[in-house]
Image (cartoon, rainbow, N blue to C red; front, side, top):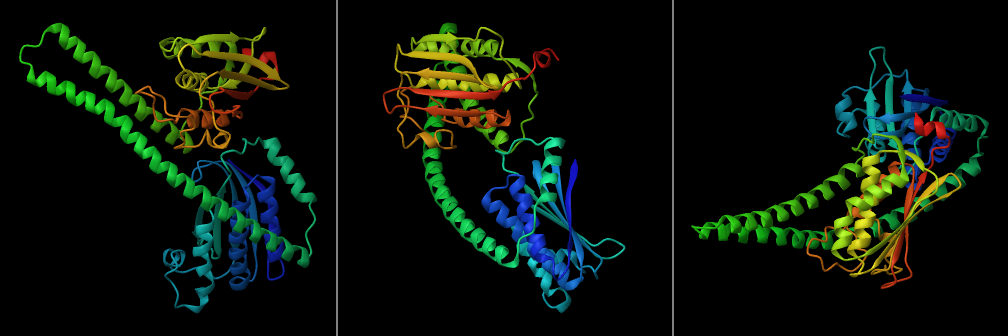
Length: 428
């Protein structure tokens, strides 16, 4: 559903206002610095073409609560005019139509298309041109209600325009910020590429072990003509365990990919956290008992209700508990505590295990990151459980964080979720 935000008239003397409105809308709806600069530049380019070739037009900003093209919330900028329109739309949008002087200016459309997440050009039957651009809100942005959108519209109306000098200063600041953001992202990409290579090496190792065991077992079965029923059962059990491990590895990768692309639909309902944590402890009991860990669970005296997908929240808590069990030496201790702070519910999982180096703490939830030393367990997994937990918690409007005093000194993961405000909501 699209909500209209504000409309700006476009003409030779109003391009500065169009840029400023694009910037204000981007700021109010939480676009990141680089996203905001891209949107402002794209709007400015299309508005300039409109003023030059159609004389005047209109720029309308809208908020889309569920954009099909952006797979979520998105800002929409739609520029319309009553000019001569664009012939050969397909060629023009691809930057291939260069000979006709009347359309030389619209080659900027190619650049604008690259700046936004989605763009559509139309020439209606009645003439003129309609350019619709969409920019997806960051995944970290919270879902906005109709009331939230209306409040931002009211703030837009009250904002005063800048002078020409102030606009020039703002453009300079934007360019500097965009350059710095680009450099930062380049460094992040370089680091991600290194982690990707390490991850692929880990993946090859993790897949090689169960596949080698399966291949060896099949070879033994082929060589033995008179295998006993007992040995057949034994060999079958070995193969079943390895296949289960392979399925788990693939499921972990698939889950992270689907959540990251916004393709997981949460089946939200009231969830009681004390019961959820008990279920998670039961689900991870085998991993905890295999290393003979002691577990201490401190529930709250009263029921603790949140609004969420119980299966996905169980998966989050289970992943954190599995992580604690995996990286804590035998006969370690795991403490699970539930508490509240203001309108938030907190699930804290503390262990006295391997700990995390200070330099690795900010990267723990990143994809392809192995934050702690590899477990000696041959079926330790791919290290994507925390990445998945982080994505799912953020989709519930919460957060997950980690603290550690250093290697060998344990870790504490804290899951924070918004509480249901009224008891009646839990019974709805």
